[in-house]
Image 1 (spheres, chains in turn purple, brown):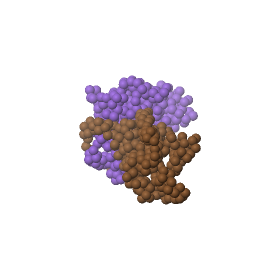
Image 2 (cartoon, one colour):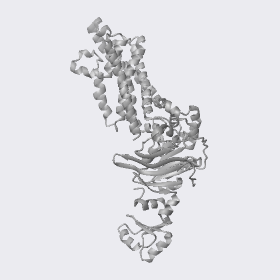
Image 3 (cartoon, rainbow over the protein chains, first blue to last red):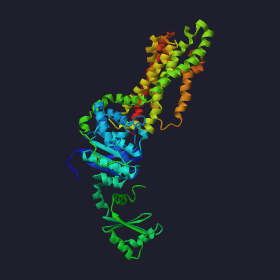
Image 4 (spheres, rainbow over the protein chains, first blue to last red):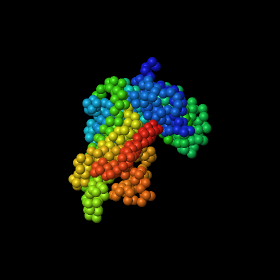
Amino acid sequence: MAVNPDTEAMIVATNLTKSYGDFKAVDGINFTVRKGESFGLLGPNGAGKSTTMKMIAATSQRTSGELTILGKDPNISGPEIRAHLGVVPQQDNLDRELKVWENLMIYGRYFGLSRKFLKVKIEELLEFAQLGEKRNSKTEELSGGMKRRLTIARGLVNEPEILMLDEPTTGLDPQARHILWDRLFRLKELGVTLVITTHYMDEAEQLCDRLMVMDKGKIMAEGSPSELIKKYSSKEVLEVRFGSANNAAVALELAGIGQRLEILPDRILVYAENGEKALEEIVKKGLEPVTSLVRRSSLEDVFLRLTGRTLVD
Amino acid sequence: MSIDLSQEPKMTWVGAKTIVDPSISIKRGALYIAESRLRAMLNWWKSIIAFGLGNPTLYLLSIGIGIGSLVDKSLGANGIDHVSYLTFLAPALLATAGLQGALDEVTWPTLQGFVWDRTFFSMNATAISGKQVVNGVMLAAMVRCALQVFLYELCLLAFGAISWQSIPILLLVASTAGLGFSSLMLAFSASIKDDDGIFALVGRFIITPMFMFSGTFYPITSMPMYLQWIGWISPQWHATNLGRALSYGMPIEPWLLIIHWSVLIGMSVVGFSLAHRVFEKRLSA
């Protein structure tokens, strides 16, 4: 979904910086998120994603720079901004002493919503999170995926203008992830602005219209997933393995094949418009890879190109 | 468990701009926090009542009646302050109940809020401020404190240790002590990283001495001077003396009355301002 640049800006960050002592967790970043957009922050652990999220959530104060959320300055209007946000933190912080439905109830009360409104809302949210049967369970009896869905449902109780999700599916099994993606996609269809951090490229490709790749507190690149791939990678990638002892030596002989080579400890990545053709060239040189695989370029490749490191260490 | 993805959940969506008025939480946030804490406490109401009645009963049977009969026998009509030992003891026991009742709500639950469940962060992710979290937690702690003191009073009444007329003033004194001490302890609990046995140390080296050396079982003046200072800085002593003066009329200098109230109220002024600062800082780190 391409978002019109005239659409209302929900978040505007200019030179946004957060330091802890000498360490700059976020180092002078600029970005804008517009209404209805699904905006992703991609980067490895420690890139500054969570710190950026906390500042957008109007809980952590910036060290310097400008930040406007929903037209207001979080340093001045924190509570007013937070009243209209939904936050799903990296760690589920549900109240263990309360039941599933009570967690939704008390959270809704924090926003000053009436019990009458919440009674109806809670039913909707339980259905949305597929937790109807668990309404009277204590939260500690829920599986990881259920807890995550409940935390997301809780973040929706005030029908937020912006829903912020910090690593929504980290630690979940594949099925639980797909259920969550489906739910988040539906929110997008409702027009909710999403801000998502992740270190999973498939998640970013699934959910985000636009991405900001972060590393060491800075923005490395910005654009839609396909734009980023087009700009920073080739159409296809050929992955060849010659055995970890030989990769480095073989790589010298591969020079000139494809547009670019990336030598990893366990394999060599050959970036090429046509992967099969690149493989043919390698075989013609009399080299025989132990395994070979041709795939489409992904955000992982973009990240590798930008930082020289893989996303998930 | 397999889940059918084809199901279409209904979702009405008007949007926060319309349904959430931030000024409501800005005004009443602390009440909402207290509401959620009390809701969690409701899960334990049976234990809270059982403990609230059982503990004093056992205590009164053993110390009050046991030691009391010994003291009354040896002192006769000239007992301490010319009242029965149980009556002399009652305000001190109520002060302890008030201090302990409020304390239980600000120690472990604070670590739960900051470290184990991080629920304080989830509160602060809404329109609720750090200060409101403090005020809400304290409000709920005071409900618990007042309840515990009241239950104790019922037991004391049943044992004939206090008159029913003295119930409100003793409740007020013990709760004020609970407020002062627990607000300080809330600030302290909020500033520790994790429990490394620190609460056990506090129990052993602060709470217990405070209980023992604050004129609880005998007038503080019967202790040597070098131990009396413990009483002077202890909310237990100030609340006990106040309670004795205001319930059965222990003779007291008017200026001392003022000091007792000032210390207890002063503690909460300092406690709240410290707690506000620590919470705001930790939540916005």
